[in-house]
Length: 408
Figure 1 (tube, rainbow, N blue to C red):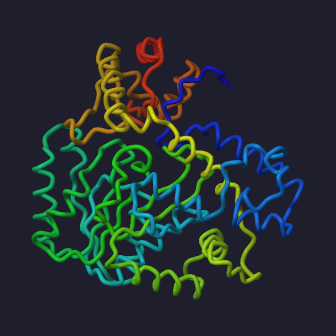
Figure 2: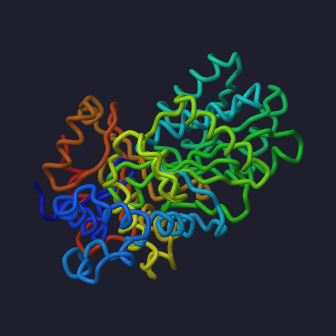
């Protein structure tokens, strides 16, 4: 255990924020004291305002909890969405991806994706395409972007042409890939819509939400998928989805109601949270894990109240990432750095030393952890850093450079 750990692994799981931690700990205490009492159900729906005055004294970490409706309001604010934007909450992010896939292949016959998507999500999409006798068209752009052989305008033109040439009518795009490539998803959508009919658009915002460009005010997507455990820093995994375009709200609602009723969409929190907000608990739903709700609200409050973070956002993250790239270049590592418009707060580095390239991903990750640095590692000597949102503290870059030079 490293008390002074330099945590650069947010793209995997974010370090739990202070208010998320406080909410989590006091939720555990409340659960011990109250269990599933009538008070607890009221507390879930309405928050601390419905509680006896001493709730603030006994469980101060839950002061941020104002009910399920306020949590959704906070999430909308983080996504810059309109006040009535529908929000879905689920225990499993994969459940929302399965829902998105079912929606896509109802009106769409051929969905365009890129090779920047999360493999597990693409597997779900491919399985649904096969079940529905539909198609998925994959455009390979990752290597060209990382090697700086593709500009933003060239990318948009290529995806627009592929969509038209392959007869596509649906889109599934990752706003930010797990490798840190940020796509101009709204520009891509607008360019394709100018020349083709796009029946449904789903955006994977897992690495985008509370990190890069999760701005839904322009309604460029029909469904935007995110989660609470990465850049939001709630730690407990929870799937989040926003309806994007007004044109498809009723279609999504109808599909959701149908899949929940038939059991084809089986996520206890998704069902329970909808019933809780509408005061329509049926008393027969599956017992639900609720810890993610409270830590999510605490984490959301931390970001919404962080004036410094809100003022700088992505620009600061990119600058912080650029500083790490400069250190890497003189420390035996090559930054796999795309053009500026594709950059995010995630940085890929490739080792130059042969011995480092031969090390396994687990050995690399363990080696850096022994030096007090948490990061993600891949085979062939590639590591991924997710830079700190408030920039480097004094000594951090020297520490990073020393670790990069001395590993293996």
